[in-house]
Each structure stands twice: as C-alpha cells, then as structure tokens.
Length: 83
Image (cartoon, rainbow, N blue to C red; front, side, top):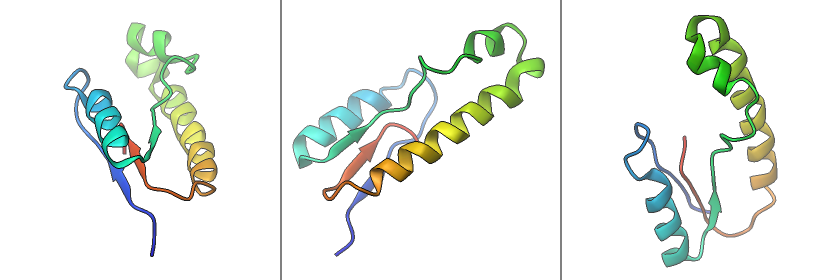
C-alpha cells in the first residue's frame, strides 16, 4: 500500500498550518511545513514583486524538490501545509 499524502492549499492566514498540525497529530503522520523564513528573497519580493518574483519562486522550487526527496524516505503518512 502506498503512503498517504495530504496537502492543504489556500491563501495566507486561513489556518493551513494549524490544520496540518492537527491532522498530523490525529493520524500520527509526519508534518511537512513550508519553509518561509529561510527564503532570502522573500523580503525583497514584498518590496518589489516584479523584480524579485522569479528568484523567490526558484528558491521555493529548489527547496521543495529537496524536501520531496527527503519525504521519500519517510514510511508513514505525510501531511503538508502547502502543495
């Protein structure tokens, strides 16, 4: 049987992380969190979206690729606060 993967998607501030945390506790799943604080382009992005959007998204893309590689090693279910 394949492991379950629950991804929660939605706008900022609606409770995705809180829901993911509750689900991970309820089902004893691994909780995968979106890494926001590590993105060095995020503050620049909010200052000038058109200038920094590509760099910001590329950081997230590369980081998510690495996260998904790590998730492949986890045996139990996974719940994530991003898709």
